Image (cartoon, rainbow, N blue to C red):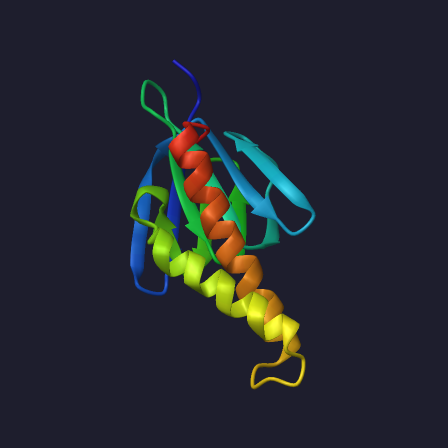
Length: 140
């Protein structure tokens, strides 16, 4: 039996996942972070992207997070995010529309939306679509 740790993924709307896992992969600001039980404690900001949770004997789970914070303790991983959604629940049409709107705003620099805000919205939409694509490919 592999060593496990407790994982909590929490959004502003509530708890998205709580359970035991062998491995968690999260989108850290400096790149993907892989965490197994007994990992050294640390805190890290997260960028928008996919969180993968692997539990013994189960299919890996995939989640989209809009950024947030990752807290790691030897037997506990906590992910706090403004938005967190199971990959299977991502609204592809809404993500495509958000991507299109952000790209338009970036192209129209005199537009109503701030450039930095449009960049952030584009990054989130692309991350949602990439998470959904990975989920469909079974890469979770």
